[in-house]
Length: 407
Image 1 (cartoon, helix red, strand yellow):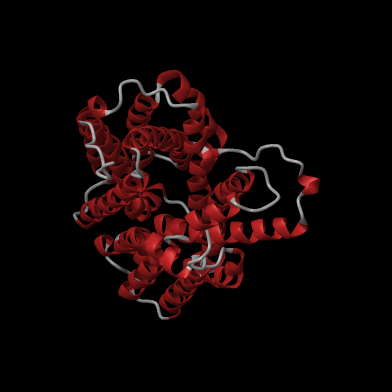
Image 2: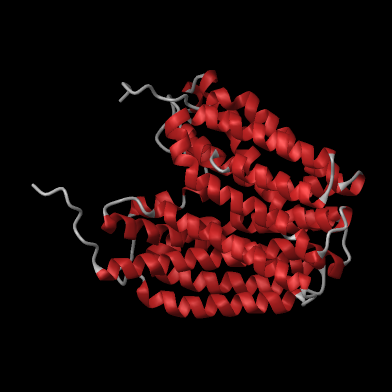
């Protein structure tokens, strides 16, 4: 019997490229937003707290209507939903960028949140179908393309900000890129692409609400472990949100960095998170998820702690880079550990953690904004190293490295 892997059909290679392009454009649109947040706040003439509340509408949209992705995909197919909602998401982002007041800005971000949630589920559902036909794991490569797209979007935002070009000009450019890439990608995707029930459920797991389970029978220790894993995941998410929502404002408003340089805190976060995720599987296999999470939390605490204690533009960029590498495996690792907690129905731990993580994304912008208005944005960002310390303390909830003899 031959051990050689059978060649991949040409149409599957095209489908893989098509899905990768959708992930890439999704990253460009979202990554291009972060560097322009200071300009948007200045144009709207609003406080940090008001900006935080408006930014929370993104998460409100995802939580409120994100679950509609599953029936849309079952009706229209993941390819059509992914491409159409990607165009809608980029259009809504343009509307947010040119909104004349905070009410329309928040409304546009609500639509961004809804459509981005639908894109997320649809592109993952289609990627799972392609992966199934490939008969080997390729899903992580799609997420790597998202990270590259986010870095590219951040660089695009930095260039437009440095050149003094309006936010609307940049977001129109991003929309044009999405239109062109979608026209190229759409014919590449699978034609018969109504996914199975399990594929849609898997792709939608991060948007799902907790399923019914006999809660009274779950041991207190299991609840404690789930709480610890949730805090670890929130620590990773909080650092990501700090970079995307506040890093450019902190660099520009408090460290007096130029508009182009201010974008590089977010770019450093995304770039080093990408590197950390490329290396993450090997690190976990070698040292175990517990040790990797503890080291990651320490890197966040020390890197961001020093950056905030001794503020400077380049020190802040280095701090966000350290945080990006440190949190790279926290959310995937916490989700995996929650999904395998004893005493819970299959998927229950993952679903509860994912739901609470989305609530944390909802609360993060207003909380940091209120602290910034009351004290300073620097103090609001101090929650990032604090979460790093909590990750170090709670990392024992993560699985240790398996011995070579373990199954």
